[in-house]
Length: 294
Image 1 (spheres, rainbow, N blue to C red):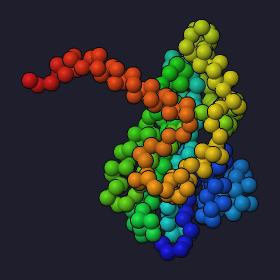
Image 2: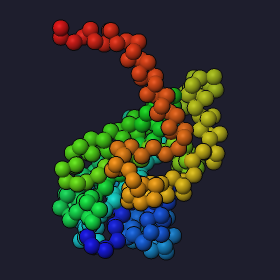
Image 3: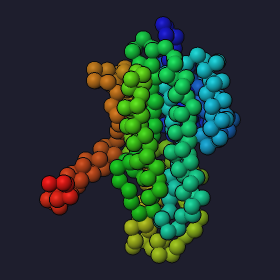
Image 4: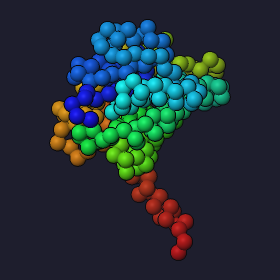
């Protein structure tokens, strides 16, 4: 690749992590292709030097294939493929319609899969960069990758999928010097939980609205958390870009982690999950081993 600046392709760059990763990469002199469903929402990135374009991860695969072809014809390569598109669907399982569930999976999971699928033939054929990596593919999990709960079952399901996708791709693409990781943030102070961004199931059942139920408590907690999240997205994206590029705090580590966990709240969720899972295995170890052929 010589001295050519690394190229980033970022979905959902209009807000949150996608937007801040784009700005961070631009400040480092990298080439950024920032996308959004409505390009006018990322005019500030264009003004900052990004190449901007309309891109909907839920478009037909043929449309995404054509966009990938166009990107490589114009820019020659993509070093960092960032799949940041996603939203939270709030609702109890009984309340949510099949269409609402599909729409969430379509953006959070299928959209990422189709984008990666369309870009991979080009990524595999491009030259290895000077750092020994051909490309890096990123999905977005969250603390929801590790813990489900009342009124966010579907969101947690999609985030588990996003993390598993990166973990699986990591093995599939290792022979081609393509790195993969899942970024797993805790609660960060973005617009993610804003009324205009968080999607609520249209059907409301009184039993789940009751604040004495876990679902009702989750709904109140999400309202209280909006605007008061622990995580600083600018600090988070400093870490993300450092780790992906192997610079700053990313230097001196043995390769890219399979999961890039961000935030002490996410760390706590993961440690608690590991502890409770180990406890479960210890308690049931005689039973679970009894099913093996003797």
